[in-house]
Length: 181
Image (cartoon, rainbow, N blue to C red; front, side):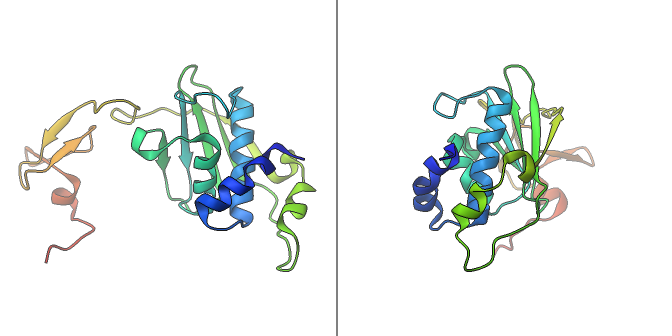
C-alpha cells in the first residue's frame, strides 16, 4: 500500500470527502517532502509550501505537512494550477511539482485503485527550483509594522504602499476588495 493511503481517512475528515484533488495533493505533498529529505512525521518548521491553487490539493497539503498559513509557512498564489512548490528554509533547496498526467478516472471508477496504479514519476512533473522570499514573507514575528496614514489600520510585513509621500495600506492605495456599508 502506498504511503499516501495512510492519509486518506484524515484527508476525508478534514476536507469532507475524497476526490482526485485530495489524492493528488496527498501524493504531491509526500513527494515534495521526500525530494527535500523531510519526514512527514517530524517537525516541519523549516518547510514553506507555495500553493498554486485554492482547491482540494491545498487541504491535502495541510493534512500531510501540518503547515499553516497563520504560521507563514503556506503561500497561496492562485494560478488555478494543480501545482505546489516546497522550500526547505534550512538549506534553500526547493522543488516545484505539477500534474503531468491529465488522464482522469471515469465517474464510476474507484479513485484509490486508479491513482494507486500510477507511479509518481508518471503523474508529476518535478522541477528543482530557486525560491527567494521577499522581505516580510519569512515565517516568524512581523518584520515591520506601520500604520496606514489614511485609515489608521496596522500594516505588517512590508505590505504597505508609499503613494504621494504617504504610507498606505493596499486597500487605501489601490481600492479594497470590500465595500463599507
